[in-house]
Length: 346
Image 1: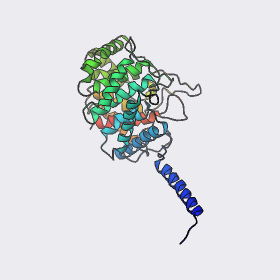
Image 2: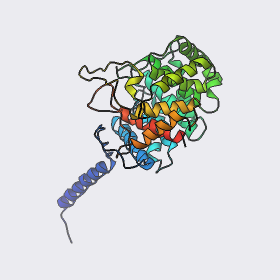
Image 3: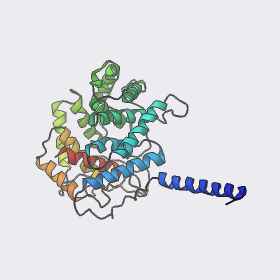
Image 4: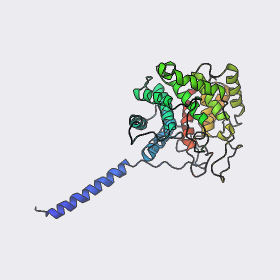
């Protein structure tokens, strides 16, 4: 049968458009449902659902925003290896994104957006290496070594300060975040030659600079687990007591209770007497476990019970933003720490 060329060309063009549209639809990431305090509680704890939510939030942010963020894909890489539920394809995709970023940092198209990108990527991948292969990946080492070149004379870093507490708010958090990552870096990186001078300055900063709030003080406690002498025994015990004293009657902790921040949105009121939330509870339970409190400690058990009973149907644990009610991205980090907390108590 003869078909005129003009119709063949038209058909081919139509098929090409159809194929491109289908490919775009297949490639489009699934949308993450907005976080809401009104989302129903799950009927029972499901780490499968937690893994599914973390995968969705982590991969969606990475593919759409194409950047790293302290509230979503960095904590995702910290927590996801703790879960054996479901395939690790999402984890590997997000990990590959950051490795590619490291490879491109010395090109015009791939230069770090902020110093904080280098610091957070290095620290996160070091923690991730420790939880996965147990070996320091060459690109992680490259990022860590680059991090020290950005260190200021006083031992701190020029952290991103968007007035979005508690994570993208002040230089202290960048320092303590780096300390945690370097502490977990495999192959004794923290005591190696390339980290010697940087670690000395970092120690000086953390021993001379008081944490501006209890949230950062908790992170310092966590870092001290991996860096001997960073905190005295008395200061460690003092911090543990402060954190235990903030546990709520329902067994959880509240993020707003860990500091006195002001929202960048004047219409957004931070409820310091509000209920327990996923980020506050997950973070504190996990850090207390790292600091040596046993899983059967009464406070830890109460915290675990709160986490078991407050997962949402989507698989996440809700945390209200300190900054705006338009979105609650801290819920993503809260879910990551809820997972770490629960797995640390098994």
